[in-house]
Every structure is written in structure tokens, then in C-alpha cells.
Length: 158
Length: 167
Image (tube, rainbow over all chains, first blue to last red; front, side, top):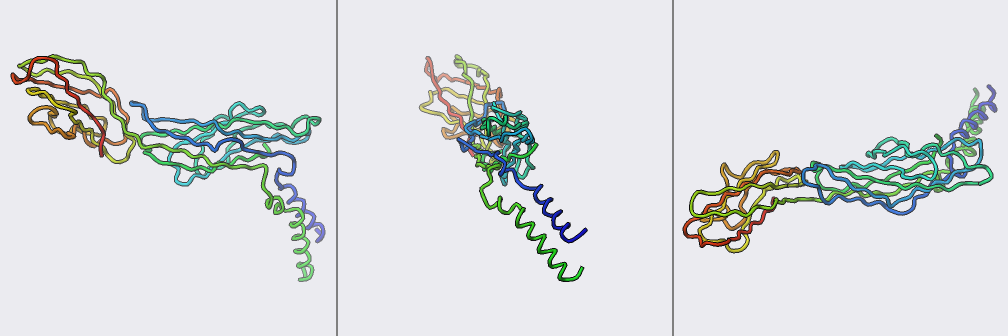
């Protein structure tokens, strides 16, 4: 292969690995930040839970028939995590929620919302949203403490 | 490949990276990824409660015993004791013993029921159960035994006991 040919092949490979941001899709968080607290256990029950639904994830879908469906994945960083935490996409205006996703420190991204198909071309970009419901669960054996999570949501091709 | 050709090929490939690499997009805020902080807190919790105790009559003679139940919860990793204290004055001639079923992992403070009212009782906190570790239990048995002597005046007598979990 000629020198010029090798350069062109390298450039094409890099183009294919580019991010989505330039194509009109985006994510935005509204409300929150979520704060969950357990302050009592019912006698006879060794676990307790608390929920928070104060945050909304807003996702903008681009228009066009040729765009691939998108999904939203979620992961977290929470060094020294003590308690169980999960998040679910509740009542999304578009897409299929996968159900509660357990959040563990250092986890690989997991699907939260799938099947985000493009808008009809005539509409332009579409703005959709879903409530984020977090659920904290702890056992008496876990003891007291505080976990601080940095939860990351990513919009990417399905 | 001669050095000049090799250098030229590196320059051309590097130029491709500058033109099409992800560096430019990474330098801007990414709209396809967002984060927020979530705080999840569990507070220290200790709780003990007793079911209502039926009133019972006793006169000079053999002791009488009544039973009820209690609940205890603690998520503190430090072992706790369940203690009882008498509130207010105690009637003359009345003696009360208490025996508590310990939750799993704990033990009674003594081999027998503990006197909490009477000549052998301390007015201060009297340990009833020790070594209570992280537990949530309910419907544990409590047995109250009361004995009166001729020194007790006839009539209704009230004895107030306070139960609490302490380190």
C-alpha cells in the first residue's frame, strides 16, 4: 500500500470512532440532587429502604430515518460503598426502561433506557424526559454511615 | 522505508489525528454524558418498646407472674445492654422481678430474674440483657413477677419502669 493510502486508512478509522455530541442528541439533569436517608428500622424487619424521585433526566433525540436507535446507560463511582442503591427510569416519555439498575462502585455501565428512536424528520429534534427513582436499601448489619455516589448517565448508540 | 519517507509517513498520520481525532470534542463539555451526586445515608438507630402490661392484683402470699412481649432494634456495631430504671417513688412492701428473653446473639444479665423494685434492687439502671448486637427483633418474652408483703398498704400501686439501650 502506498504511503498516501496508509494515511487515508488511518484517518477513516478515527472518524468512525467519534462521539455522538455533534449529532444533536443530548442529556440534561434537572432537579435533585437526590438525598436518601434511612432513620429507623421496623422491629422484626432487618432491612429498611428509602426512595428519592426528585431528579429528571431530559434527553434530546435527533431527527432522521437513518439514525440508529440510542440508549442511556448508567454507572457510578462510590468509594467505600456500604449500602445498596438502585436507580430506575420511571414513566419515560419515550423509550423502554430496563427496570431498576443496581449501582455498585466501579461497575461497568448498564442499560437504563433503551429504544430511543429518532424523531420524525419534520419535527426536528425531540425533547423527552424520565423521572429517576433512586432506592436505598440497608440492613441492620450494615451499621450507620453515608455513601456518596457520582452517578453518570451516557447517551450512546444501542 | 528510508528515514525521510518514514518521517513523512508519521507526519501525514499525525496530521490525520489532528484533523479527525476526538481531542477537539473532548475539550468541550460533552452533552451526551451528565453526572450528579447522590447521597445515601443510614442513621444510627436504637429502639426498645414493650407491649402494654396488664394490671394484676397481688396480696401477701406467693408471687404472681404476668407476661408480655418487647421489641428491640439496633444497627450500632457496638454491643448494647438493655437496662431498666425505676421512675418515681416505689411503694413499700412491693417487690418486682423482670426476666427478658434475649434476642439472638445476646444473653440475660443474670442466671435468674432481676429484681428491679424491692430491697435488693438498684434504683439506677439495672442490666437485664447484655451483648445486644445489630438486631431487629420483636415478640420477645417479658415476665414480670410481683410479690407483696404485709408492709404494703392496700390499694392500687403504680410502678414506673424505664427501659433503654445503652452502650
